[in-house]
Image (cartoon, rainbow, N blue to C red; front, side, top):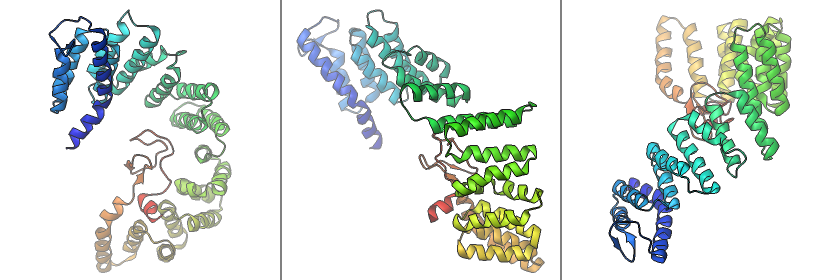
Length: 398
């Protein structure tokens, strides 16, 4: 039943065009070959309608292709069929229909631009990104220039061509009045991450330059500050790392958990371990996070010993109950128990492990894609900033 309903939804635009087509033939009684019924309509037209009404969608499409073949001037029917093919996932057939339109010499400029735009979308749907980009490039300066540029930006992100993505986003912001500041900031951050991962001697300088541009594009976004701290830490400049992360602590404290281990390591490297622990604990009390909890438990165990760390963890879990935290607490207790007692703790740990693992994912707020690690861009829907810096358990808890 669901498949039937979906087909009818996809066919609705085709019905409108078929109605126009019928009216056109009734008025013009054109000659296009084939037996005609009802005052001039091609026989294939009625076969197609009959197949549609009997839910034989594939045969209906084939019949309407015959209509188009009998009367090549039915441009609107070409568009309807091509779009219907694309929506059904038949990109190769959609490409053939729209490519035929693009190559026809009897279309006016507006129709040819429309066909080229549809063809670009066909290529994009089929994963033929080079051809899609070429089609959209040819539409610059036309009435399809803006949507084509959006698709070009989409392609640039898919192939991770961040310089081109920046150029296109800045163009949309400058020429179309669109707010692309956050996108541009992310693109510069991606270039910073790429530079940091390279072996170039100037990688830190390149990363800092990109992060400066990211902060210029969107001063309120926490990502450039988080990355600036990571770059400084990688250089061994722990004071600069702390300074960058202090800005996150002040303006976006819930994001500090993403760099909790680095935060504590930077303070420890400067001989200020207690200050780092206390500051992170203060943030954790206001914005509980399993990532901060885990980092703090490890830091306290190293500084105060396992028993003291367990006592702190128990107190923290009373303030902010968490199954993930409980799993971590049981692991800490297992390390302190004697052999006989350790078995009991490990049994309890195994009982909650499966449930805890389900709650440990990051969840995209747009498409629901779940991931073990945090992403700034969702791998499922490719949207930016759809992940909160909290695990699914923390999201469910609110």
